[in-house]
Length: 408
Image (cartoon, rainbow, N blue to C red; front, side, top):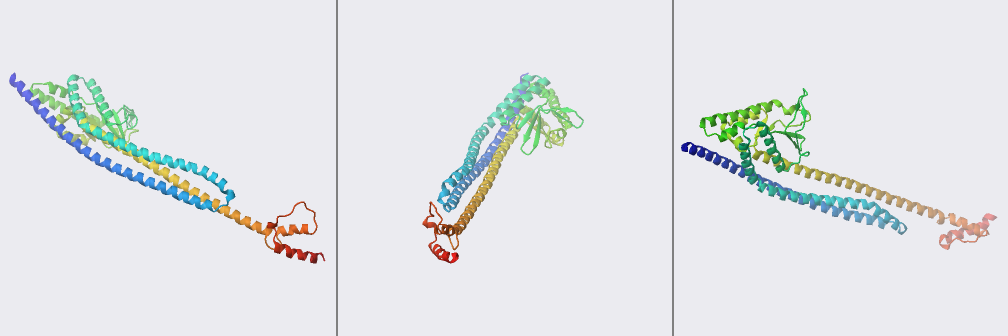
């Protein structure tokens, strides 16, 4: 009995060491991911700084050019219209001022959001390795407690999957949804465990209904022959689930835009590693059925990657909105310049017509003022007189000399 216990303890020690080696490799992978994301975050920050600098410079140039243009136009206008034009200009410019301030706030808010996101991402990645270890230990303990109850295993697998989704940062109802109903071409109803949405109008289906009864009995067995049989049964159980999942053909369901593969989630890390170690062809078999096997560790990494992709997508959408608003603001400014040019042209035309009317009224031979003044000179009784500055002396004298001749 002591010899069997030693052999069993030695095997468990070897499994634990293998598991620790696997976790160490995954920790190294997570560290590499951290370095990559740090570099990406740094580049994004430089890009955001450059965008902010260019926008601020454009705003300053726009304000200066507009001020110069307004001064140039209004300096050419008459003093009598200056106050009215100034009030009109202020009322016209107020919407532009508000849009410029809103535009600046959007840029500053985007920069602040990116800074907060980089800080949060750094903290989350630093805790990723420890979190994965805790999840593996908890999953192993819970598997031993399940005692082969298939329904309870399914519920617990969904619970582990839900926790990973929460840790990933994705939001239910936004970036993913659970237990949604879909039908195939024949009207048969399906209810995928989780559907993860991607920014490119694609979906990823995650299935968590994996039976681990054989693995639980394998882990608690002391008999080598029995362990060998249970290990083979564990591998066969995964193969059977792969085939069943492949027949569901989620890619053809109505309302789904799924990729060419489905994620089959194994909620216990050691169970996943043990099966793949025993049967390396298991992954190939799954891929042939358009299925990818995932454990808690690599699923969390994948979902965190999807979360980061969504964050960049939201930032790009904000940048596109800012660009659209800037384009609309530019178009409005061009329209305002055109309107100012029309106002200036109208004022110039009005001034020209005023000068022409004044010439007809008081300048040149036979102007209206001199002809009206003749009535007074001919003896018409009036109570008022035309001011001297409206009278052309030369023209008045010439016309006066001709009056007697006309009377003859």
